[in-house]
Image 1 (tube, rainbow, N blue to C red):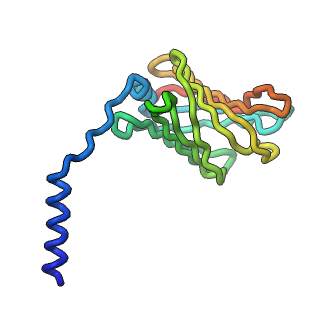
Image 2: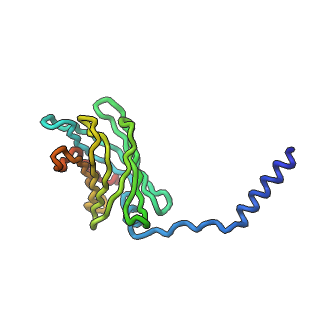
Image 3: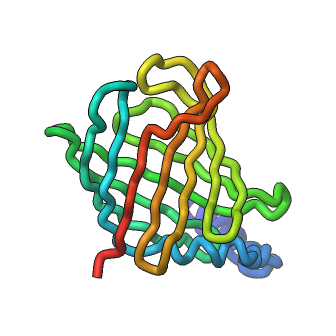
Length: 178
């Protein structure tokens, strides 16, 4: 039995090695744009949880790495008034859709947000849908990442109100660690 298992394993390995493996996808210019997001960042954040209340402020540490030449994977960590917070964002570009795509998950939210968006110069606009933090009602949302320089970026999060107007509820100003 051991001989049969070893023979089958060797056959599978030899077949895989002999097969024409698919070539990795060629990065597009949009994938190249994502490279500038990689690195270590310190991010000052202001979050308006409810209209009329003062914003919650905190400082994040962000580590963004490239996964091959096609994906940006960011990890966010901070302490929000004594509560540990962690989040992860993936960003890539889908040449077939001609759109940026991605996800957001975090330690305080059971939903996975999926993004689709476009690039205009140094500003990436990502659209998604998720629960309104104040009401829990599903609403359209938008994250706008503006790269100001090689060492500075600003991300603003918006949600669409019942009146159709977009309201900013999070601003994150990031500076690259030196």
